[in-house]
Figure 1: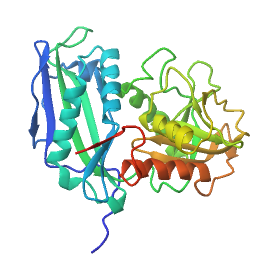
Figure 2: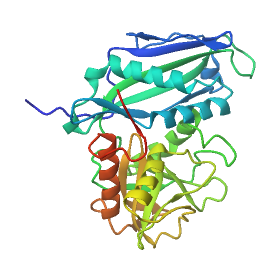
Figure 3: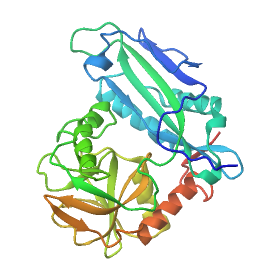
Length: 334
């Protein structure tokens, strides 16, 4: 039998979850087959960007069971995004119930363990209802959609090329730290131009000074210095990545290497040995080169994944797929 390959494209699964907030409370939520929604043309989610979402995955273990990775952290981050956008928080218990109901209803779509593909989970919330003034809506839709996927940037072991953009992803005191659609909309134009020039994606610098690396496209940035330290940018306008947080834990507690959240100046990269983009979709994608103003910086490990990055990757996916023991109460088995 031909081995099935997984990309990062939409595949309709059997059921998805929908719940409505009206009159000050959430309903119980239902599973439905239709993957289309009908909302008012005056919804705040359409006109004022009142919406947020999450990205997470379900993993098939070697024993056939399915597990989630740090779903409670996604739930808490979702609440933070809702509150920053003046939307009613989805309680942690309701969020977890919606995720587990949707995954269980589509359990046959979870790829086999040996494929190392996953079932991507997209919880989302949007403001709906008939609105005209610039103010929060009184009605909201919370939903969960799932679909089988591979990796976002392609084969994980092959380093990719990035270019530094002069555009900003988020304002210094804006909403860069929460997972709302406006941040991603702002990244589409520079991402398009990066790909037109032959790069995999773009690197955003800090919006205040344009001197420090912040994020890599739709993922967090990390690097390993020549003295073996794991470093990642520290900024109030960066989304707190659950993947990056996990890698810092693995580096510090499992690999026993130093971890620093610090400024990474774009004109001071000589001390880097390895670099990568990390996130739920990207997992870990090694960075081979960084180009800025026609200057191309080639990292020491530009042809293959570096040794520290490889250990981080192996430990992360080992935990996510159940091949390595859960080190920190991260796993929920369905």
